[in-house]
Structures are given as structure tokens and as C-alpha cells.
Amino acid sequence: MGKKESKHNNSDDGALFRKAAGDVRPLNSPDRHPLQSRKAGSRAAVRPGARNTPDDTPATESIEAGEELSFVRGSLKRSMLRDLRRGKLRIREELDLHGLTGAEAKSILDEFVTECIARNLECVRIVHGKGLRSGSRGPVLKALVNDYLRAHAEVRAFCSARQSDGGTGAVNVLLKTT
Image (cartoon, rainbow, N blue to C red; front, side, top):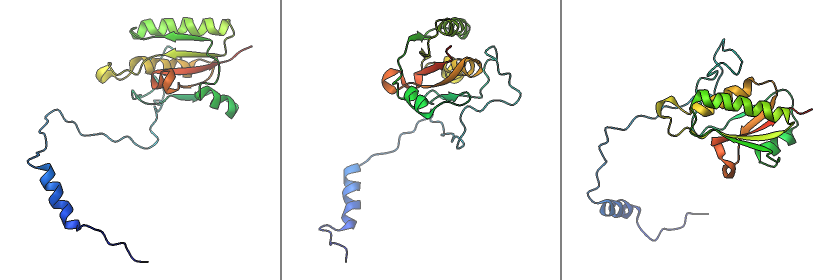
């Protein structure tokens, strides 16, 4: 089998492109910063010697605004985690932390989780936002929620919500029930 003959000459492609591009020049942008590549598998690693309590802020090195969060404590049926990730479990209560300071958010988050456990609610959602307006500090509330939930003994699992439910700006949380 031979190659099919092309109806045009490949050298014409270069000439056509140069003609179409005309006097186009690259932009000179002093604000450009080189991309910093992330190491493979570098997902919010816990600092050595970090305390594992809700009072330790933050226990993770860094979390990116668009990064998905995921955590499982102990063993959990795959189907349960899959349903949590896909948003198939009924969300019984939701908390929105947008616009709060770290201290305010931590206090309200603690009250919310404590109340949900007392009410025996198994699945809740916490909206922390993506942290796009946090500047160089990164997503402050997202990191706070991540650290708090990982340290709380009554949290069985959590993961970022479906895109339609807030995406990486919210987490679905599975709490221990009695």
C-alpha cells in the first residue's frame, strides 16, 4: 500500500502560512512568569512533625485553587466513596464559608460539624470557594477546611463536589453516624 498523493505541494503550506500571518510579532510582556512544574504525585503533602488537630493551621504545604480534595479514614466501601464523589448521596445540610476570615470560618465550621454529628447527619457539603481572590496566600479557606476535616475523628471521608455542585470550591463530607 502506497501513500495517497496529495493534491497540493507541502512547500506551499509554509508560504500560505507566512502570507496569512503577515507582520505578526510576539507580544513583549514584562508580567510573564515562567511556569513552575509540580512534581508528579505532589498532592498536599503533610509537613513532617505537623500536629494532626483541627487547631493546627495549616497542616498541609500548599493546595492549588483548582486542586481536587479527597480523603478517606480507615476502610470504606468503594461504592460509598464512588457515590460520595458522584454526588449520589443525599446532602442533608450545607455550609457556605465564602467571605469569612480564617478565624470566623474555623469557628463556624466547628459548630457546623459538631451540630451535624449531634443530628446524626451522614452526608453534608461545605462550600469553601476556590480561593481565586486570595492572591499569593493561596486558597485560605480551602486549606483550612481540608486540614480541619482530615484531623476530625468523626469524618469518615470527603472529596471535592461535582462541577455542578461547586467543583473544587466545595467538598462533600461523609460523617460517622450512630
